[in-house]
Image 1 (tube, helix red, strand yellow):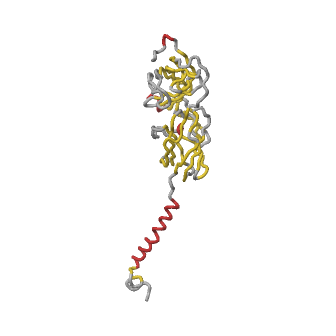
Image 2: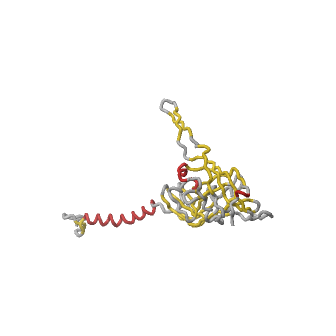
Image 3: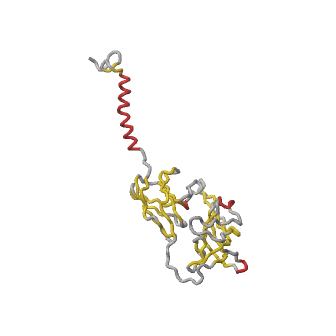
Length: 286
């Protein structure tokens, strides 16, 4: 008896085409499962981090992340807990340097400009979020020995100059008279919130780009700046603590970083000058 008869049946029972289809399905399904397991990229898993707390005064902050399925080219970002990471906030200022060691452990170098608070950790593959861990770590103010301060608790109205480095896209949102919201979550509210008195440009940071031409010559093009240095003048109520003026746990002294936060934007800069206003200009505080 032939394998395929004159009517195209296999062993005289099963149609040959039907048999081929069944065989394809029988062998194709396990092959598909094997291929999926081999070629499917599994999402990273963040199991734990160490350490979970850093001092706001630390100059270098490195964090070890353990888990599984880590791989090169992932990008790590951090964001304050309760403040979702959006396209507008997804910037280099929130990006952590991602240093892969193995598929189960990586090291992150956190941004230098993080203020006190609790932060979430995100992992992105290109523009797609692939992993998230809420309340991953915190930036805290160190407990330092207190020295005797005869003026502890003294309140005063200060006027400070701050050199801000601002993205051009924020400039239209900033108005003279804007009032700081006292840095929610970082300290007690100030009896006299910081108020922006003036904001003047220092430099537009325009750059000259040299573009080579086909004949070997170069053409110089003035590029549009993306950031601008601005001198801001701010008046605020401060409290003296441990011989240092403080505003919502921000140290108010020359060279310190200062953050000005409203409901629509946040800008940061360095304090360049400060003056205590005379008693006649002090705002009465409770």
